[in-house]
Structure formats: structure tokens, C-alpha cells
Image 1 (spheres, rainbow, N blue to C red):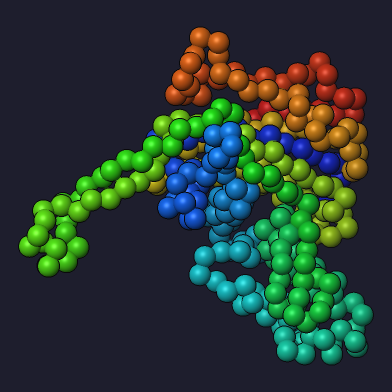
Image 2: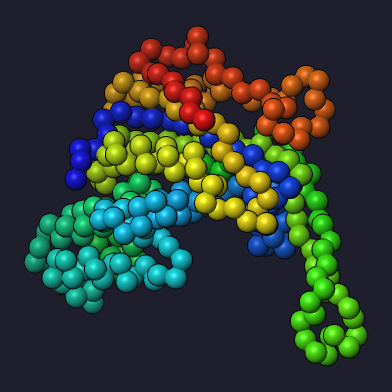
Length: 296
């Protein structure tokens, strides 16, 4: 394994959606998530991390050290059992084994972090180990994301659609088309903020410089392998990264986030494209010991 990162980072991601649903709410009929008090659109951190995981899985496939723990169709405890096999302990006997080996927690945690990119990055709750009363059952990852929020309020639209193929023979005798609905956001520019802790990388997961470069690559391309009719046209427009000169950081995160502004141009009343917006970074007020990189 490579050495863990030695610098703290904060980052801001801007992505947009055109005529699509960036993140449906199952409790609201899959309508785009929205803050009901303000009308601003929301995209959950879980949704964004899913895109990052999918991109890494597609790019790395089965490369050792870059497997994905939280993935479709694979029970989590199947991967947990691999770690138990590695240390030579049956999952049902973890409590007893811990009494005999005080280093068992570290061995299991290190195995999972070394083999699974998303645990090394985002952390995980590993139920098999939690049930075994092991501290390694909950790993706090160095990379954390918040909810994305739209720069301006959005106006979701419900679109009625039709299908010429009828579902059943009985229905075909009564009607010639099937009716359905889908939700879209005509246009929305979203902003998400994230954190990378070098301190947690060193103490817990071993998140490395190579992992960091892959993370930036995954964020910039997370929608490129995830296109669908439901999501419309989605793309990451810019990734702004603040790098601290130290492990613990040289400035509070909120000060850095406040330096990044996005607003639609004065002559635009209803934004319908990324070109209708201006994104700026107040580089003159970046604190000492912090540098800024803009990636597109």
C-alpha cells in the first residue's frame, strides 16, 4: 500500500441537469428532491457516492485494492466473511476470538481498507463485525460529502407520456395506449461540498495520493458512465479543490467554501444552460497555507 495523504483538502463540485431527474424521492412518487420551504433542489450524498463507486468499479474492475464494498446484488456480509477467512476466524466466533487476540480489530479493519476502495475512502458500517462487538465494525472514512443544493430554486415538471405497447391481452381490448408519468427538472445547476481528512487517512484507512487522484477523476466523470433517459443530460461542470499545507489544515472549511460563488448573469431571468451562470473564486482572500485548483 502507498503512504496515506499528508494534506487536508476541501472541495466544491458544480454539476447540472437538463430535462432530467437528478435524484428522485421515493417518498414523493420519485419526484426530484426539493426543499419545500425554499424551492431549492437537493441531491443526497448517498446518490453522489453511488456514482463515484460505479465509476471506480467500471474503470478498475477487479484490480486488487479497488474492489467496491457497497454494490448492487452483493450482500455485505459476503465480503465481511472474506476478512474473517483472512484472519482464520469464523464469523460466529468473533467475540471469543477478540478475547484471545487484542489485535483482531486492526487486522480485520486493515484487510477491508486495503481491499475495498469505498471503505478506504468513505468508510463503512460492517454489520458482521458490529454484531461481533468489534470496534472495526464502524470505519469512519476520510472523504465526506454533504447534500448538493441547486444554486437557484428549481421548478420540477410532471410530464405525461404514452406507450403503444399494451401490458396485457385484457387491456388491449379496452385501450390502444398506456399512459405514464415522469418528472423532470428543465434545468438546474447544483453545488456539492466535500472534505478530505489526512488525519483520518493516516490513523484509520490509509487513503493514499493514488486514491485521491482516482477520487478527483471519479468526481469529474461520475455522470459520464451513468447516462439514462430518466436522468436527462447531467454533467460535472467544475471541481474546485482547496489544498492545505498541513495534515490538520490552515483555515476553517466554511471560510474556503464562502470564497466560491455561483450566480446567474444579470441579463438572464430563467437560466437554462451552464453558460447562463458565472462561477468565481475570490483568490485574493485565500488564507495563507492554502492553495486552490480548478478542474474541468
